[in-house]
Amino acid sequence: MIKYITLLFLALPFFGIAQKKELTKEEYIARVKAAPDSISTLVDLRRVGGYDPVYPELQALYNNLSNNVKNSTEGKEFQDYLNTLETVQIGKIAPAFTQNDTSGNPVQLADFKGKYVLLDFWASWCAPCRRENPNLVKSYAKYQKDGFEILGVSMDKASDKAKWLKAIQDDGLTWKQVGDLKGWDNEAGVMYDVKAIPMNFLVDPNGKIIAKYLRGEELDKKLAEIFKK
Image (cartoon, rainbow, N blue to C red):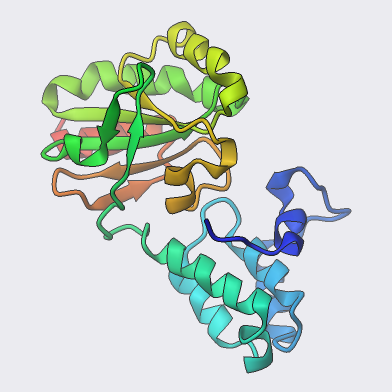
């Protein structure tokens, strides 16, 4: 697992540390461009990405930092992060992984080849995830017969396994659920650069990522477009 510098983690708003005044994306970009020689600029650069970072944008901004910053330990770690981010952009082949389901049986992403599959990263303790689940249940019931599947990937810890299983039952999640019960260190989550949940990736029958972060009506609209409904 890539070890990002503590400074970057602690500075992110979605890890629970609030700023006195949250800046806009444009303001963060301006700060990055104004201080290319400062290692702390990497914090602002990470904030530019927010919940759904765009690789080409971040890489272009990173490329304009000074060599001293890019060659620092923190700079090299940030480039590693960008390399990971690049692999899960729309148009890329979804990285393969295998994790156990709720019964301990291994499930591979490759098992869903030939179908549209939504990789849904969530957790039992995540209130926004639980609020989103009814939308997933509705879309699954509507499009499963057309070749749509969902693969739920749990970001729960081993200590929360019972809560995870209960949430699956309580929310009526009838599709396949997997997880290694490592929390935020879930290997698939690290592979897909999941830093906030709910997060999802829509993969086509050929294994290519065609959309991500589809929530509420956006998922249903995308599936209606795909299946011509």
